[in-house]
Image (cartoon, protein in one colour):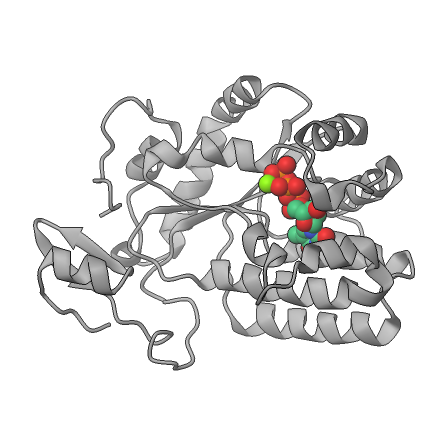
Length: 292
Ligand code: TTP
Ligand code: MG
């Protein structure tokens, strides 16, 4: 990282990747911006939470609760999926999955990887909507099982997936699984009316639900080493948040265990992380609005 001091105004207009601290500006010029290969920085390991659950389980709404807490929240890049150089690949996938699911899942895998390795600006907590794992273990798996992705396509995407998880050091410390009945998720999808999902069926949600259950609850076929907290997401968002808060002690313990395994210089204190996840959002945070 190259640190350049300059005026805040100048930098804000010419480059979006700056952060400010004590009126000085630290400009992060990373290897990506120089077109060089990189992986997740060793010195930057935020406590990383993946929020998982069926389509319509409420992941985005759940994540929006944390926006005020100055943690990094990465919602899914659905805008990109709907507009890759003018192509709505999400829509193509729903229109003709046998033709487009490989294309779409390749895009999902690439964009999820980008979120996993996105440059860290010393935020102690990172929350993500889904992960590269659910794309592979739930969606790709379902497409293949349903005969909508061919064996060679499945093999290629799986080879990429395995290479990524072997080589890219994807950080994941906790999974919050928003568990819903498929009927509840279906009703929410009808209510929100995302145009690409107009032909989505309850049967599809039942299958995806089973794959989430197999992976995150039953540990069948695919399992995870990352601890999972299951929340009843048939309920309202305030109720789900309340249930999440009941897990505070358990989560703080996991944070402490994680901190013991990483060097002090690369991690924030458990109390700071606890404050960010569970503190009163109306109260000032321990870090300023840039997360530093
Ligand atoms: P979700 O990732 O489930 O996100 P959501 O915004 O629908 O969920 P929530 O209401 O809980 O916030 O799905 C987004 C859309 O992308 C949905 O139509 C399913 C589709 N999708 C795939 O087809 N394959 C994938 O690998 C992923 C991640 C999503
Ligand atoms: Mg969402």
